[in-house]
Length: 181
Length: 181
Image (tube, rainbow over all chains, first blue to last red; front, side):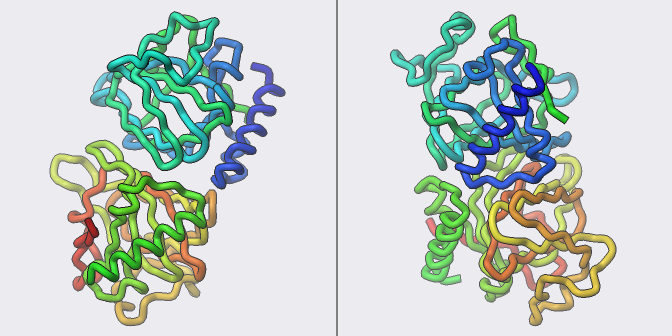
């Protein structure tokens, strides 16, 4: 991604955080992480992150999604001696999020599967999160999520986070965060 | 505490969460934890909690403090085979919080030490948290905090939480949560 594109998305992210009445520090605002997962279609597949804390025991982030923006399907595998994979809790703060996990598939998902990468979305057990709703995901289970038509802000509480170890269903995806310093 | 007093404080807690634009589910609203730590002076010493998630790896809560309400001094010791004591990150969401940790004492703390239990406040390294500010506390270190004159809402991200193992400086304190079912 171009630095100018990252800056534009960082600005948009701040607008969503403002709508959600979530304050971030100037340093956090400068370090908003913007990732298109290497797919080159950020408005469709990607996400924006404010990482509040990530240590060897726990992690807390704010995830900001543009309207219909999708975090593609992935899982968090076990990492060596660090026990089971990352466990995470998604809590919707603002907007609406369609979360898909392993289990019984819905017939008509409320999310729109990104057409260009359609075959790499395989789980369709639908969980709808509105503000105040949350869902805790067991380690190493497939999941993906998409914001509703107005975008979304989602808190993620989890065990420690190491994005580099995430395994995406889509072989084209490389989870290289782009941080504008 | 009387059940009616707990209910009144739960209602007040919901008002502060509303001011902070933080949504909670009906079940979370019913289960707001109100604790006076057994001191019988809740408006001075005590706190209100919404526990979002507490599993064997991480914990996330919202702490609501009334104006000048104080969480008395305590630490989180190591618990058997579960490694070091609880590590926690306080992130101010709304209002202002005066946090005191081990280290160089300030001469004039912005918090007002509760007179009746004055001798049980021993650390005075002052950290002031406004919305968007946060502080991560190492395990097993003494700390206490007080809301500013308008009250406060603080997110706590941490390793797993076990209030029963907390060690308070004040020998009168018993951390028995009162939950109105």
